[in-house]
Length: 416
Ligand code: LLP
View 1 (cartoon, rainbow, N blue to C red):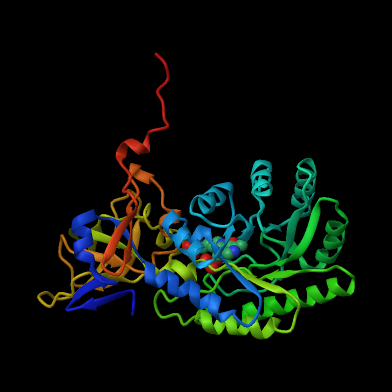
View 2: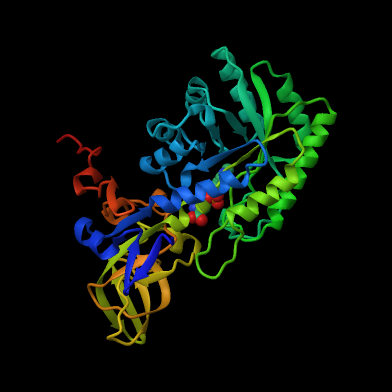
């Protein structure tokens, strides 16, 4: 069953009509499908059945506790990049022994906390971080489990802001420095070397960059094994793209089959860190049209969601499908810029969209389950949207709409 589909010209999520959700919970609202999230996670997990593996959901894509909890119940691991994400995973019932910690700037207290709860692996991104981790683990009389994140210098052919695996990026350790650093790591008394990690970018729509990065990681693994350095796992990161418009990324089944073929017969457990491909198309942003405005030759549909709710169009010129919740037959279509109320010309959710819409109509901004709410802000002092999880014909508020008082709850006035 498609998560979002029209029935008699009305858009449904699983068993519920979106117009009814808008009436009950207001707009803007993020709406997620439990079935879609679970199906996508399972597709990765089942696709890797042929090899020992762990699917570590990238928490940054959508860190709502309900989503983390659903995935924890399925047995998911988690890829985190901050203590905040670690605390969310623990709060949601995730297993600390299935957490991997990525990121170039892990602070001392974040490393200490992750050591204390006993995570599966630190994806170390520099020599300085390795030394810091060795020192802190020593203070705690522990050995820190480590992968070195290498930079395979492969072009992922994606938007430059979300490419990470090229030599010029801040991420990872250059391939030519890796063997030396592995030797140093091996010699450190409070480091336990477990694996190799890489992640080359996000929203990849071609498979070849994944294959090339994997081949380079395997070549490094061979070099390390030949030098007598044992490894237990390979972490190939996340990055599989989704369809926003007319892209044709591989399905999780095809992607995982490729990975299995490449690593089969090797003595490694395989870790992957998908985020977007699990939640991206399992969520949409529901918004109501406030005004229709005509200005010169331009037509605007001014809606109640804005760039603070969904930043991707403004930040990456990302294209999200925008569709009416009710399909109208009574008016002609027009070309609109769908814009929000924020005081920036860049507050455009979708430019040049052909729509049949009048003031008051609901619109669905699709593919908003990943990097939607998690990148939202309070810019223009806008309370963040409610988040709803639909499960069949049931719905739950999994995050309340923020109240205005919450916006300034931690602020204070200067004394007279
Ligand atoms: N692992 C690491 C180390 C990462 O840096 C990322 C994403 C992932 C896994 C998950 O990648 P995914 O499977 O979701 O592509 N805000 C941007 C995306 C930034 C991705 C950052 N890293 C966007 O909205 O497109």
